[in-house]
Image (cartoon, helix red, strand yellow):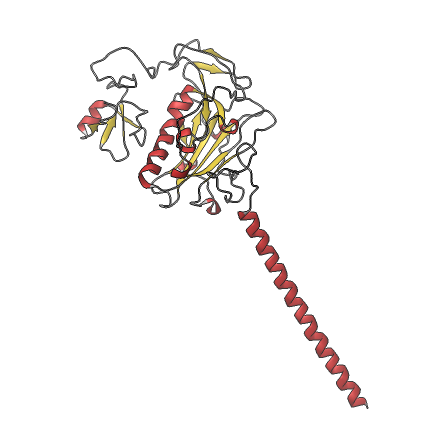
Length: 345
C-alpha cells in the first residue's frame, strides 16, 4: 500500500513539473511575439494623415521611418555652436555628415511636415525625395501664406527689393508643395537664394539624372520664442548609393548683408555701415566680362562657380546646371582648363 501511494505521489509531482514547464515556455513565447509585433507596428504603422491633416494623397506613402521627423540629439544644430553671421551664406556642421539613423534609410518616398507650434512656427520637414515627389504642374501662388514673423519690407540693397521671401523648407522643385503652411517660413532673400537654393539644385539634378532617392530633412532653428528662425539646418543623403552622390549637413543663415533683423518680431533696419564685401546679386552695370541672362555680371575679383566634376564654370551662381557652389576667379577657371557653361554664358 505504501509503495502505491509513493508511486502515485511521484506521478503527480512529475505531471505537475511538466505542466509548470509548459506554461513557462508558452508565457515566454507569447511575450516575445507580442513585443516583436509591437516593435514592428511602432516602426511601420503611421496615422493616415499628413500635410494638412487630411487623408494621405497618392503621392505620400504611409510607411515612414519611426519617429521620422525627429532630429537626433547630437545632430540637431545648437545655436551656441554656430559662429556669428559674417557674410557666408552657410557653414558645414557635424563635419558635413547628416544625422539620419539606420532606420531612417528607406528608398520608399514620403513627405512629412510637422504641425505648427503654439506660436505658429514651422517644425521639421522630412522626406525621402524622388522623381515621384517632384512637381508635375506649374508652380502655384503662395502669397496667401503669412509665416510667423512675416513683414513686407523693401531695401534697395536687396536683390528684388524685398527683404523676406516665403521660403519653402523643402523646395517646390523637390516636393511640388505650394501654399503648405507647414512648409513655408519667413526667410531672407539671402537665405533663400544664396543659402538654400544651391543645395536644392544639387539634389534635384541628382534625382533627375539617377532616378535615386534622397533622404532630406530641413530644421528651422529658432531661439526661444522668436518668430523668425535664425537659420535652417539642411541634411541630405542619397539612399541607393549610400551617400556617394549626395551627402551634406549644413546650417544656412537667415540673414541679409547690410540689414539688421529683430528675430522676435521680424522688424528690420538698414545697417549704418552697409555690407559691401559682396556685390549685389543683380546689376545693370556692364563690365568687360559677359553678362548672364539672369542679370548677374561675373568678374575676376568676385569669381565664378565650378561643378563638382570640374569641367564647367558658371557666371550665374543659380544656374540649374551647377552642382556645387565652388567659387574661383575667372582667370583661375580658365587656367585650370574649365570651359564656360553653355546655359548661363
